Length: 383
Ligand SMILES: Cc1cc2nc3c(=O)[nH]c(=O)nc-3n(C[C@H](O)[C@H](O)[C@H](O)COP(=O)(O)OP(=O)(O)OC[C@H]3O[C@@H](n4cnc5c(N)ncnc54)[C@H](O)[C@@H]3O)c2cc1C
Image (cartoon, rainbow, N blue to C red):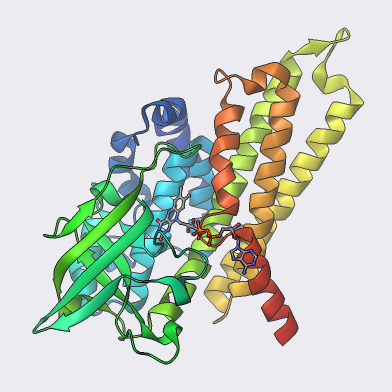
């Protein structure tokens, strides 16, 4: 029982859990092996609002508070890391900037498509030579020509790209700005569009069911009205979007850690050494105690960041702390879960090796943990 949650949030958690147990968890190994999401499950997600967690109801979303959105992502991750990453990126990275900065016309045009359960959307920030340093590094350009933007450049690691009908793209709209960080904008690119090429997915260590692709933009022409928000506000929009996304990744990390703990508990009850179940050895109990405690701590920091997202203008520090702690927790817990399985933990027969591989991304994506420490330190020094 989590006392931080309202009765309504607990009921929602239970509903998502039941859905995940039936539609997602039993297929997680297959999703990983075949490197393909289970679209039958995604098509059923709108009934629980999972494809529009924080999209207002008038555009087909669930209009949930941020704690409920975090609960949903945690539950999905408890069943399948690949599915959780795809859904987290769709909600946090693609729907969210459209909700925050889209005009009414843009919201009507894009959000009902995104919330319908047939597709998942993308956000394209990262480039072959720009990840942590987007402000200085983004080279993809958008130049005005008549009533269009002409976009040229390359993006890298774009989650959901092969099937995304909408790819929100970070571009340089002012190449001459004295400060490189001032010349960036977000533009909605519909897919397919002539000149936009989604290259084959990158082969990955984990979250293998979720596709991550390089993109090529060669003279891609989109209408001027596809600009999201104000011109040259793209860096601020990106940082805000990533703050929200980090709460989602923290929740996914907690879900993966929880899944690893549950697998470990099941195993140590069954496996015997020295005439007793593993669970009866004090050394094993110490491990379980630390795993459970660290998960609770990470979950509370995630709820704290989600609460701050709904109540504070600036929640960068809380989001960074949650993602940093939760991703370190999932690394620790998944490592220990494999350790408790002994040799079997190293086999693909048991879910813990997949969970370990899936969680490894969480300390890299949406701001590597080193960068999050810089974000936290800056806020601490400012205070
Ligand atoms: C599976 C997957 C899915 C992804 N999905 C998306 C997506 O949908 N959209 C998108 O735009 N991007 C996506 N990314 C990209 C991801 O956000 C970047 O990989 C991440 O931001 C790190 O950037 P980088 O890989 O370029 O690393 P770099 O920026 O090159 O950093 C490399 C290492 O150096 C460290 N480092 C960098 N600068 C400093 C510093 N000043 N001080 C200390 N350490 C530093 C970093 O922390 C990191 O450990 C995805 C990546 C993966 C692997």
